[in-house]
Every structure is written in C-alpha cells, then in structure tokens.
Length: 178
Image 1 (cartoon, one colour):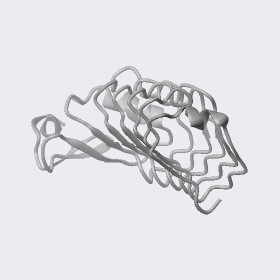
Image 2 (cartoon, rainbow, N blue to C red; image 1 turned 120 degrees about the horizontal axis):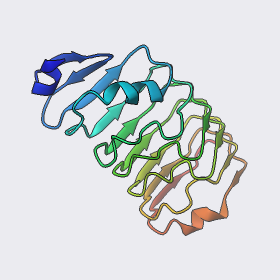
Image 3 (cartoon, rainbow, N blue to C red; image 1 turned 60 degrees about the horizontal axis):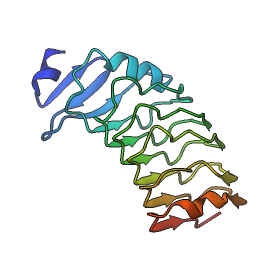
C-alpha cells in the first residue's frame, strides 16, 4: 500500500494493480469487482492525485451506478477505459464527477440504452468510442461542445438524433457496419 503512494515500479493497492512506468501513475487493473461503484469507493483511500488513466477493462462490470465517479476523481482522470465488460445501460449521471475526462472507450460491452444526461458530467469530452455494442438508436450526446470523434461502428443503429448536428466540434463520426 505504501509502495503505491511512493511510486515503486509495481505495487499492490488493493484491490488494484498500480504501476508507475513513467510519471503520471497509471491504474492498470482492478480485478474481482462487480461494478464501478465498488472500485471508486475502494480508491478513495488511495492517493489519486497523479492518476490520469483509469482502466477498468475486462473486469466483468455489468453496471455503473450514477455518480460512482464523484466526488473524488473530478479533473484527475483524462482517459477512461471500460472495454470488454457487460454493461447494458448508461443511466443519466453515469459519468458525473469526470469533469476532466477527454476520452472514453467503451467498446465490446452490451450497451443497448443510453439515457439523456449520461455524459453530462464530462464537459471536456473530445473522443467517445461506443463501437461493438448493441445500440439501435443514439441520442445521448447533447451539449458536448468539445466532442470531436464519435465511433459508433458495429452496432445495430436504425436512427440517430438530430442533436448530432449540434456537435459543432465534431470532425469524425464513424457509423460503419450498422
């Protein structure tokens, strides 16, 4: 535990594996968790001041409790990886508390529904990858003025919201294989 705060090459900060390959510290893996709320709650005791990448990929997470990331991570996390989980729904407020996140990667989940307001806690969001999910409609990015890249490939999209036209910074929208 103390090694994680001091920056050793590899250390255990239960239930996570934290490594300092370079500055800043990267949280690499947190095994044995069933939801994101459990992870964030356990991290509160750990010094997260230099953590910019939060990777919760392939952890069998099936839900994210709205507000699970707040308070505590605010402007610390810039990249969030939640790849290869079993998340089926993103509720309003899911990402509240991730004010500084610029990139979210959630491919290969089972996301079928995204409620309006799911990304309201991410005013700095520039890239969103929701590829290889089970979306049939997409309406959930209203108000994301900085969003530049949106990947919705390999879904089952039948319709898109008119609100996509409000994304003035959007330079790439990938809809292949729908």
